[in-house]
Amino acid sequence: RVTKEVDSTSKEAKSFLKQQEKWQSAAPAAFPTVSGVKRPSGMSSLLGKIGSKKQKMSTLEKSKLDWETFKEEEGIVEELAIHNRGKDGYIERKAFLERVDHRQFEIERDIRLSRMKP
Image (cartoon, rainbow, N blue to C red; front, top):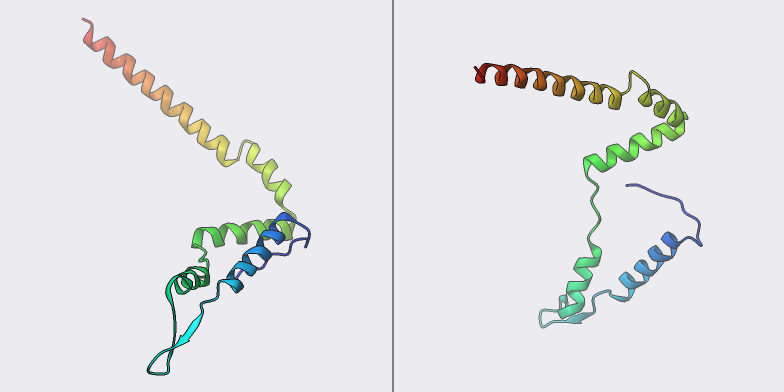
């Protein structure tokens, strides 16, 4: 379960409260049946089933949320941004490998073309 604190006047808080009101007003109406067991009827039961489902969080979303929280708690957001821009960063390494791969392809292509011409 994930909790999030927001300002009560924020747009997100207002939409959450509206959604809660809809769920409460869409509660299924119950009618007694012959056997004495209450059973929801028609459209209201469908709305109740749809509204009552809990939102599931995937492992990837949970991991991302945990990582963001950890970075904020430890105060390492800026440090990570600086490190990733540097020579040892992931993006720079990927770009380097891509350039090397492209150069190797051009060399191999030139060799193949030189063998075909004579």
